Image (cartoon, rainbow, N blue to C red; front, side):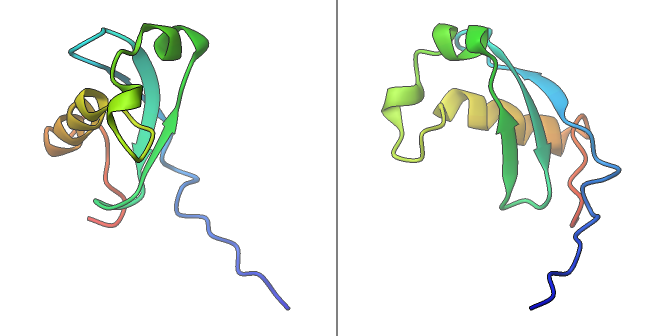
Length: 80
C-alpha cells in the first residue's frame, strides 16, 4: 500500500495562542475549520483550569481563543 504524502502543513507553522481564562500559551494551527492541532507546554497544562471541563480534553476557553485567532487572521486556516 502506498501512502500519499500530505504536504499541506509544510507552510503552516504553529502559532502562539494565549488562553483568556488562565493566560496559558500553547502553539496551534488549523488545517481546516474542523481540525485544530494544539501543542501544549508543561506550563500551559499546569496553568489550565478548564481541561477537565470538556470530553474532548481541551479547555473550552482555549478552543474559543484559537477560533477567535483564526477568525481574526492570526492563525491561517489552510482549507479556507
